[in-house]
Length: 87
Image 1 (cartoon, rainbow, N blue to C red):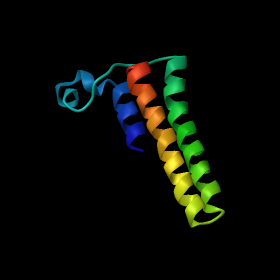
Image 2: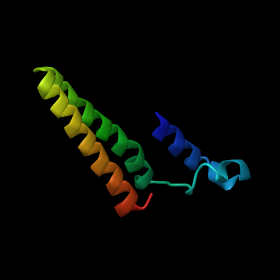
Image 3: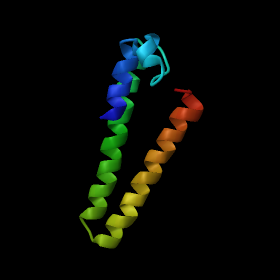
């Protein structure tokens, strides 16, 4: 939810205002890139929730391992966005 709020704030140009400049950096995104920015986090969270659900459907140990795996997948996604994409 917080990711979507931050993205929407960037889309409306809040970082360009003096009030928003302290909390957000970035500019306006349009076209296919906008669609990707909206779809990628949703896909990430569906996948990581699915990993956790599969683990939870078995036993506690499998669930714990699945949660760790989901966290690793989320970390790799975040690292990719920050380092490769530069967002």
